[in-house]
Length: 284
Length: 284
Image (cartoon, rainbow over all chains, first blue to last red; front, side):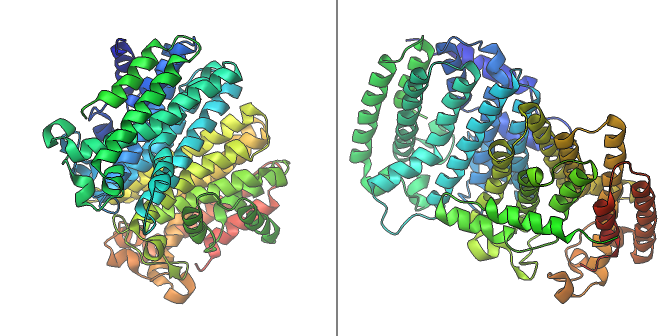
């Protein structure tokens, strides 16, 4: 199972090709968080699913870039002093530290709006498919924001069910959107669609549990942000609510379920399988 | 020239019909700024242009509501402490004062994203027209955000040309979007499209000049927000840069030009004419 570095490279090339332009100061500030690197998990996942379903990967690049813009928008706004108040992301000052809180709000807004522009103006596909891709993106963002709201307004005593629901939205929504957008682009049989979405949903919860464990156990240098910030910020996470041992056990269970779901997939999910495995074995 | 109150009533009905739902706490916070009233200028303008072009006004309501959601998103983010830091809007505490800065960021994000959802899921029209409506909305939001960026990062010595460009984007972009979305829905001849867009562009600059004059000369009670706040905040406006007398003269010139453009319009622009006249004679 080889990790699909060629798909990550396609995403990176797409990000350069479709880099923000227009209003100079704003475009520069928009490029800053996009160029900060990161795993590019969501857009790579999108391309991997297009590949698995037999679609043309190159044609899907604008959709993948749009999804990364949306993910980046969510990070820029999440990092604001009004929300998580994080000064460091991927080893660099966050957008609001670099450009000011006011510009960071606008950068997030412009990235979200620009993502829709990319799908509308750059993605080549029939109008009916484009509408489905847009619908998958809208629904994903809507669910993500609902999850972020839960995150900033948790109940007094959150339990495991609440955590799972919150993560399914906050983190899972864009992973599901990656798969749903790929499905909308290629148009496989409904049974295939369900099987691929099931992988996305498992990955959504698993990714967040692993993230919470890494926050508690990783080092600043590897993470590119302060380790232990969840506990410091009083965040509601798998580790702070259920403890490290239980979180690790849940991550292992999720990894096993995801692996079984991937093994049963129709199509040619080799690249997808490598991405799923990496989510559970990564160190950042 | 009777003001089209029936179109405003349609907008209000549409806002109720398509009120945010879903995640309870977030939906409540999204409804708060939408229910604060306001002039509903942009959506009413959209419906008036559909009417003038001979389109079906009732069918355009979801597009009008989407545009008001976008306008409301821009107000919620503009009012944040990170930007204008306004505590009062339309006589009520602003969204971040009522629900917290974190929730206000998410409310704005959700309104912008939800606007695209409304056009995708609620607007009944052929897929090709829907794509044009979405394109008009994306381009409008993109230009508006560019204008907001100019507003928060003005040059050391802004002049009249800079002001006009800034206002054409910050304020004019959504008025242009109102007309462009209506045109996209109805599909008139290209010459008609250009004539209607010219009205929107004149209105964009005129509306902002009048706004700046009212901020300097109106009373708190009528405006529903603190009068004179532009000067207090050191904002770059027609009044603070050019003085009250010059701003008033420019408003009168814009009113005359807009009136002439409306008089020359093809179609049946009676409702539109009344809206344009109101923009220049309002007291809030």
